[in-house]
Length: 426
Length: 160
Image 1 (cartoon, each protein chain N blue to C red):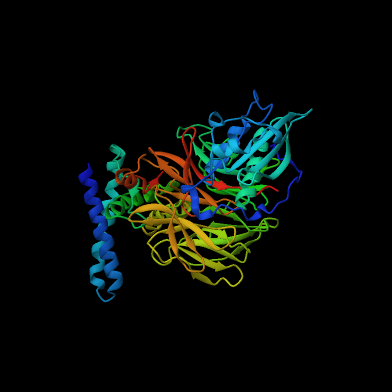
Image 2: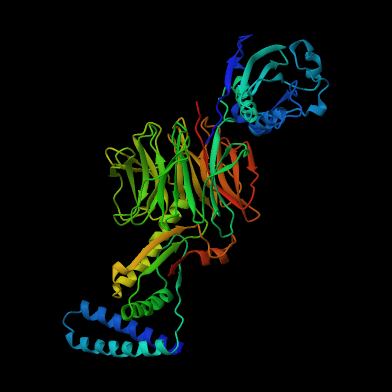
């Protein structure tokens, strides 16, 4: 287990002009992306990773930027002295990134500068260091900073995701719990099993994950320490053992168990394994997700005749119904600011991802694909990952919370599903 | 052979129905002895089974977001219940759902379906300690595809 987060950010603030208000309107989406030129960095040729390409792809996928291909650039400056702003204005670039890569005794150091082409000023300058295998980490760190300096929103390119891969052929490694960069790169299997794996989820500090595995021929909840790769079986109850969700402080796991008859929400103290029953009825209660402050659990229940989203205060136990639109609303996830939630919503027989404003109750459908499920929100709240189908294959999709940006993540072998977007790791 | 079995099923069904009626209408005690005939019919059944095994459905199908047993499933399960009381064995009921909707809700739905079969078998006299239930949700479809044809085959309980 070697998450390489030895990316050191040394901020050399050369210019601190008031660029904080130079934000791109978030609701513009990809209708009007800002042209940006990321010039190939000096001494970056012949390396195992193409830093320029990774940064450009990250920024393009965010929907806010339109990277200019290097072939269309009039010049390829690598120092500030070589920058001719007129050339970049002619190319239509609003922003410019140049830099130089240095090989160090162990790893790499990249010094780079971000310019505002129109005002001809340096917006940001920094040096990023990484290990020998850290070129992607460096690229993501630069992408995150450039994105944040221009949009005012924290970047998520350096975050990780989990997802489940099903190779769809019997064998000891048919089902895999995968761990990857959010652009899909550097994917590797944390768990392999001949039996189904589902419901992967993160602790808020990104150090542990929880998931459900059928490796004992029955479902059980496991918690894995990512640094050691050690997995601990947390439950072994009769019936359902599913839908784990770490409390915001990481001390408890909400889950669904049916040991007492029907599927109900329980909260387990991870240290003592003590269980507290939160719901108690003869209906299906499942898919718990914590409110941002950890005082309530939002979950799916069919107590009203069809699956709908409810919220229950974990102390008082008082439930409240949150969704009223449509006859199928399930698997809620609350946004990081707690102001809205996303869910699986059925409209005209088709399953989409929808968001609902917590205060007004207004619902909005975000996806146009079908058989959509498992929405998972980015830690900056700007985008979500979900699972869908294309050509009878399970693939991952992404959509911005304003539905303006949509793309599918290419899948490797077999079906991929149940993406879980990881938290910020620092 | 199948005919023999369906007659048994019908007899059993009638027996059950009259049994229920007599329970409800307490005064009509005279009706009760008629149900005694049913066990006589059942006694013949093992001989038939010994000669040549008869296929009884081991997969039971359900409607979308429903755990209600169909009448066909009930008839087959009555035959299973008879077999299981004659020659008890541990059985495993695996509940499944189609791919639509959310995965953990489908896990719960698969369990609902397995429990519906379990409860029916227990009512028919099968010992609960012999029945294990497990739900696989939508994780193990019987048939691949995203049309009702495949979905209807995946909303099921398998008796193993």
